[in-house]
Image 1 (cartoon, rainbow, N blue to C red):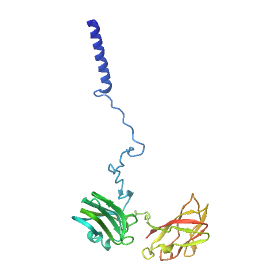
Image 2 (cartoon, rainbow, N blue to C red):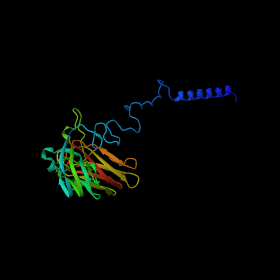
Image 3 (cartoon, rainbow, N blue to C red):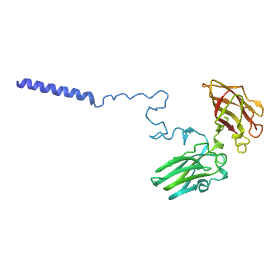
Length: 297
């Protein structure tokens, strides 16, 4: 190969290398276009946490505890324990100073800051002795959330933390919501839901008195906004009439596999003040799983 040919081949190789490099590194050149955000999503992209959330999806816009929108005043009560707890039950209301002046507040969550715990340790939140939530072998900040509605003085009277095994606890934080401030000016309140765990099968022309499932003393004076009935027919269809103090409330409800959830809105029905008898009259075989009362002051 002549010297001239060798020089030509070398020059061609250098030119190709320069062109290839220029395809990837261009100082000052345009950058690849980034994908546009989804329309009307506020910049949210799939796979990213929502605004206000951490990388694990906790939190949320306006959320507290379980992520719902709330307008009431929030308050925290912190118990600085800084000691080892072994097979002990702590009276949280007494330790936090949550007296009768907190009646009507909702217990949203209890955060237990655990420095260390034994391998068999269990930390449980108790409301009136009922286990609401449990953490096993807890470490760090552990959140315990009531399973059911937890309004102080109405649903909950005693609040306890049960520790089985050994755990060194730094502090306990109780997150509260003032329900008296939940309602927005000019708008009706959200009401409170009172579930009645009926779970009963009705046969033919049957009768179910709901007042036996209601704590009439606790909810006396509350107005019934809605009654939600969850039921399924044994066969094709069944009928339900809701009667309060002998007066039919609305039209006869037809329950089938497509309409298993029915809502009735009574007129001027106040528990203990005119609404002393709440009865379901059924026709046909059906299973009444649950009835929920939505109440307001």
